[in-house]
Amino acid sequence: MDICTGANEKKGMVVAMEKILIVDDSKTSRKFLKNMLTESGYEVVAEAVDGVDGVEKYKEVHPDIVTMDITMPHLDGIDAVSEIMRVDPNAKIIMVTAAGQKSNVVEALKRGAVDFIQKPFEKEVIAEVIKKVMEEE
Ligand SMILES: [Mg+2]
Image 1 (cartoon, helix red, strand yellow):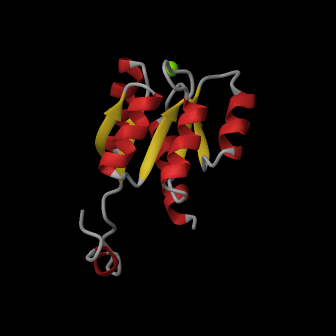
Image 2: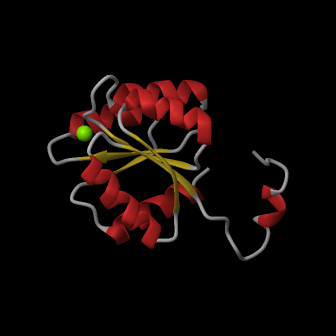
């Protein structure tokens, strides 16, 4: 992991490619998201199949952004947010939600998630949310 070169690289017009971790128990959702993110110029560095796996992979790859499904076995997305925020209080986690999960989204935001995107996925919307999240600080 190289922490020293980042600052200089970001001074120029070229912005580093954001590294993304996808956490979702649905293989289809992961594939969809990965395709969209890749097409938008992001680098998907890892995929996790449930909340426990998500926390582990977060520690391994230290991504810039996490997309987090809510309903998953072993550890759901809400508790995974708590775990990751404990590991890294600056983590940027975007919840991926289906319709009718408003109260879950509110809870996830309370626990430290920064934003959310809704299924069905739209490439432009996802890219816009990630851009917004990366600009905040
Ligand atoms: Mg799920």
